[in-house]
Length: 148
Image (cartoon, rainbow, N blue to C red):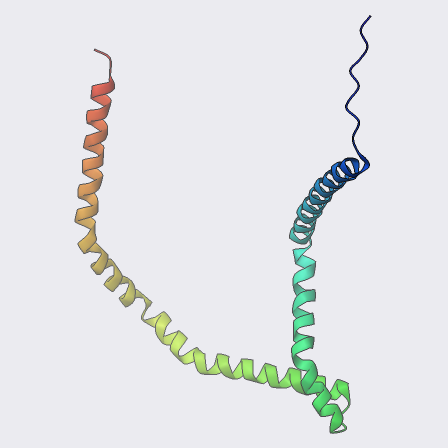
């Protein structure tokens, strides 16, 4: 009867090194799994997270204005209302001033479309030639590969 091979005795330092290497690989695997789960969680929670992150960024951006107005003895709700009204009025002013050019672009859309079609008509014949050539090459390759 043969005795099973006994692994060579390792020193305490070698055992600790081996254990440390194994723990490092387990740590890397766990971090990778965590990152994959985190990306999946953010993907599925984006409908909730997007408004929350946007609100956080707006609060971070506008809080210095609120603090400035607090130093001038204006209550935070009133300063927040003032900021919202200013942003809303800037937005409405932008829409008002852009409405004229946009309506002009919409009214000129058919003319612009005709100009684009006219310019693309120049490219139509070379593209048709390439399509015809590719069909001919396909036919030649098909006839060459067909068994006699």
